[in-house]
Image (cartoon, rainbow, N blue to C red):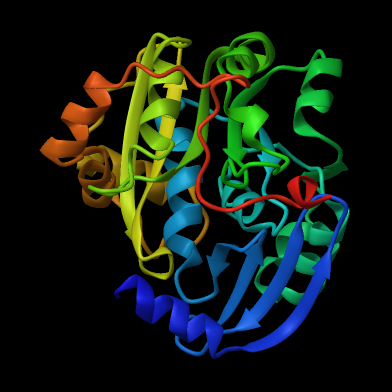
Length: 301
């Protein structure tokens, strides 16, 4: 679907809720073909009709590559969908979801009923705090770290959590041996991947020994979206058949989007993007941050 069509669907939608938290503008819109759409700082976060593409993609590859994931720390993820997917893994004993914006979390808990079971799980620990501050003060290490953060927009709360210093000084010490970090990386299409995705990829490549970029088309985003896995341990070479076997034996319920073939396809980026990622030299720092179009609440104050 063309971007103009997506924007038109949302613009014609019925506004269910609007608000401004300490950190972000919040909107929930009934958009028609996309269902309920959550929008933060003017950026579409997820749509009821296809959110499973994003959330299965950000969670399951890293947990499937890990030999026995038991502990997961989610940075952001306030709507609860990332926690929902992580909790489907039978080996996972504890999921911490740390989001800075309590108003967003409470609104999603109330209105996004699909995640009600996840929010009620005794394996989920919800922390309202800056993920950086929480990870700095803890001594606990995790099998999986997930960066389900808002896009880096100027004045927004999250761009500092895409920097080399954050990855190197805060996240790496919080990973167990064999641990895996995965983060969303923004648009990863032919024309859009150089906005922030290529920079985030290169920054992780300068911080971790092994890095895997991957992407999938998300219709409500009107673009291909990218994620990146990183670890200091080699990723195992597993076939599509072995991936399907792991899904069957490790995950409760049937996935809607991801299977062995879909995972292999998402890792097989097109030639243009692969060459561009290989040539990227920009390292993401607070001083040299790249931003996606938009602005945060802080910039307007």
